[in-house]
Image 1 (cartoon, rainbow, N blue to C red):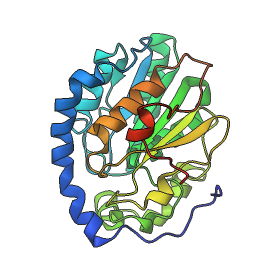
Image 2 (image 1 turned 120 degrees about the horizontal axis):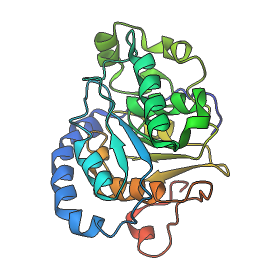
Image 3 (image 1 turned 90 degrees about the vertical axis):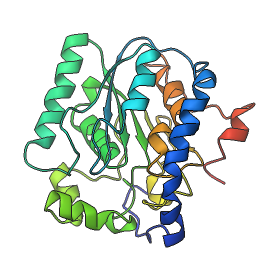
Image 4 (image 1 turned 30 degrees about the horizontal axis):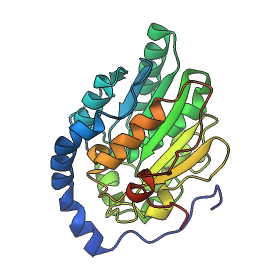
Length: 256
């Protein structure tokens, strides 16, 4: 996979209809909390969680609550619904990232769901000295905007052409940030073409596959565990996700 955006078809209508399982995945998350409690604890560093298109901090509350229970200083994005890069949105994210970094004196990990993951990657490119790592959940950074079933919704919500967003971000969306980066994706994603949600493998970047819907990925038990596992690494000691043992059953080989 190259760093250039790929031209891909959006997921099928059948996969789109299967997005309704996101509600069941929330129930699975609640039921899996005793097992998820076995995930490694963090070191208390700040974590900024960014929501997807037309979603708000309410959508990321289960994930943020769980990460907070693991010891992290977690914040939502504090901007209401994510309606795209409207006036002031990028500046507000920059200000919040700076505030979290300055207040804690520590680098901030960025976790972004769908469109929020595109924001996270670009923030890390703009301010790598303030970012510890980036984790994306079903974010279509490596494909064109029309490889999703949400591009019309994006244009209506933002009032802008989806194709123009690379220019608004100031750099290519496909290129990896200069910090450790993990892309979590699902081949049964009904909103974004899964091929465009995978990261180029390198010494500082990887992909993790889960069997999840797009709309439920932020609270899918396997995705939540993977996020906690990645965040728990010591700063400066990032290593690829270990699929050994039981993890090989839960997490398919992303390169198969």
